[in-house]
Image 1: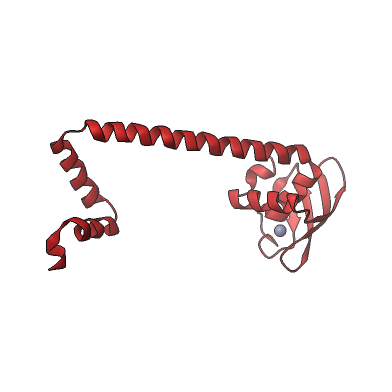
Image 2: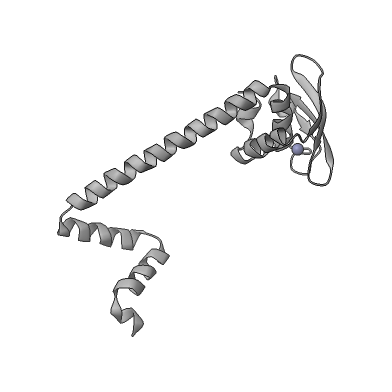
Length: 153
Ligand SMILES: [Zn+2]
């Protein structure tokens, strides 16, 4: 697994923003696997070193990552600066995944609509009971409020 595979989704996107926002002040290739430099953070510049061979040996002195074995947004920004093609790929894949997810949701919504339309009254009543009893309390409360006049007595 590579460095960015170990970053959280939030760190990836924040790191990508840092990269496109040119927050990486310095990025030097130390050897084949190690890059080091400075990244401008919230109110301070951080010393960042990324190790592609041993991702968890990467270092950053920001409060989030200092002394911990995590991949922070500064490391991600440094990685994308060293490998712009990877940044492009990350972005394209993310956009593609979002579009696919949207299409999937639309498909599911249509299927749901079709399914509900075809259900008979008894089945619908069963399903509603199930949802109200098993679902979250706010849903139960809302149903009472919206459909049961005794609620307001
Ligand atoms: Zn950091």
